[in-house]
Image (cartoon, rainbow, N blue to C red; front, side):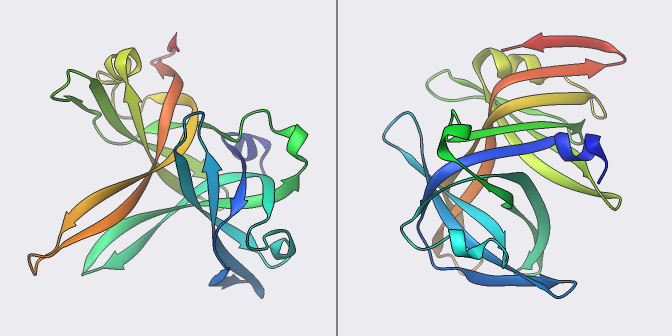
Length: 211
């Protein structure tokens, strides 16, 4: 695989397997499963993150077992209620020793801004900016990864133009939200996104760095 494509999307996770494997799909005769990994934050909160695992690595993902891995954050579209929904999952490439991961949740991506950033301020005056990043993958595919920035990072990203090259370091987080269905019922769902800690934007060869 192209070296650049291997390094524009890097994830390191360390956590506890919190679900039994569920068959996800088969590719070229190889089976892939999805599990949930409980990954602690520095606070008491825990992110429950989806991980896609090849049958070749499945023996490392026993329920309740601690595991550290390296891989990539992938996306695909799934049709739900006749609408396309973006699904995210960490694709596990290799199992590593715990001491090889200093932080239990780190992601580094290099991609391109593919939608106008959405900037807003909360009732408590906290500045937030949402941005969708397209990250190239092998075989002419791309992963579309939602990111959220706060404070000065949010102010920095809000004016970035579509097509600008961007580099982000952060962590993958899970967040519950309420979805009102057509029936009028309210359903609790989980969203996944990259929480930005460091960001740089290269617009027309002018590189600016913050974080």
